[in-house]
Image (cartoon, one colour):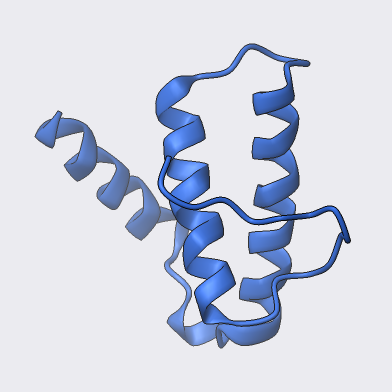
Length: 81
């Protein structure tokens, strides 16, 4: 994992740079597949909530992918593995 966010002072994601770091950390945690209730799993849930809040505040609804687009992107990523 390259860079992680420091939440010794918890805060919402402040800018796109923190958002990008959170997304990269989420990807790494998903790849690690932490077991439920583990520290990694808890961090994954925490970061996911922060990313969702950031997207709701900063990404216009018309730019957010539809569930069908998300499924298509997921399927494409799975085919690449």
